[in-house]
Image 1: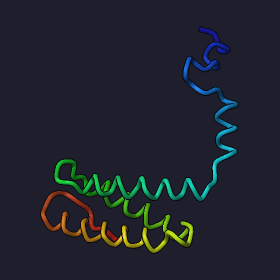
Image 2 (image 1 turned 180 degrees about the horizontal axis):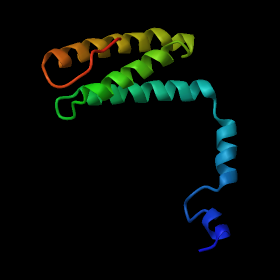
Image 3 (image 1 turned 30 degrees about the vertical axis):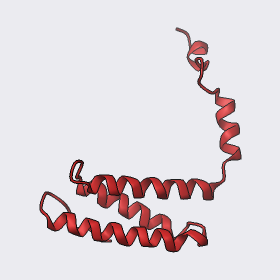
Length: 105
């Protein structure tokens, strides 16, 4: 395979130009909200008994906490409540035992 073949999108994949066009349309605030939601979901998942990983949960909580300040004002309170709930869930999970680092949240 030569270099020009490697740059060509395969069936169903967008081209580089299409990706750039889509990124130009994207709103940063929408991406921040999406990222905050993703970090919240990841944190809750990492706190579950089936997939408990307190280090990863802590990291997701800290990332979410950092994003709260730049969220659209209308959503800040809601996400701050999510952070608080996650911090409580983290404390419960940490006190239940298992390896973890202290959560500075």
